[in-house]
Image (cartoon, rainbow, N blue to C red; front, side, top):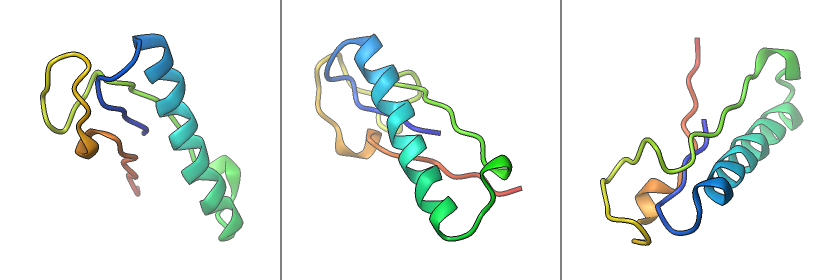
Length: 69
């Protein structure tokens, strides 16, 4: 699940967070994990690790979370 900080528009951050998650998925596929076993999602700026005001750059919010089941 990809995430972003609150810099930029909601639409841009949604797309960016999805690209982050897809990039991590692609790296796992290169390691041999079957693509069908991996799901990706982008949450944009909606689930911050560190709450901030709009347009505040917070590096800890720019992340990908990986859940293993």
